[in-house]
Image (cartoon, rainbow over all chains, first blue to last red; front, side, top):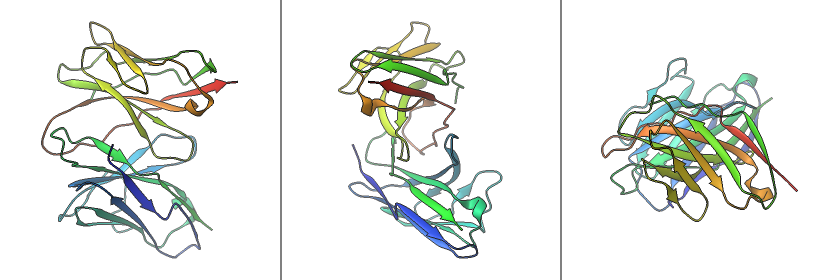
Length: 117
Length: 113
């Protein structure tokens, strides 16, 4: 299957700082990337959908000015958590779609563990 | 996308078959059944999908009832590395704009030595 990477795999930062998470499709061009968030012992919750070259679509309750998403190329999307606070500590997972299949299957990255002190 | 119902947890002895059920009584005719699993602190991993026929791949088998209102994922010889949360997802599969996956609570499968 197609490979999606995320960097960093884990990050610890101080409250008030900004953190950037990268999501890359390594062997295919991703026209759409999804960003999910997962709190401990909970399921994945979709945060936003980004299509290459256009603005991201955010789910209800997700602050677009706090979670900045950029999808400037067909292989890279970034999520920037601005002015992070302890309640933003979570597991952030991206998925990418558009690998040439007409059915647009999704392939997931390994996730990024964010801890805000 | 149709809603799914799964048991919250199941245990299975190592080497035995693990049968994970999923109810999707409101499934539409153009919706497929997908299974993913998530090992602790990792991203979800695709397992298998099907429409109405039974499917098998190197990881698992998917049995879908004739009325398509339920399905069972079978791991034929479970190992300790199969311990994970298993998600059953029903979604439309079509060419065009990609759609997000809606994850429910899933089933925590614990394979016991």
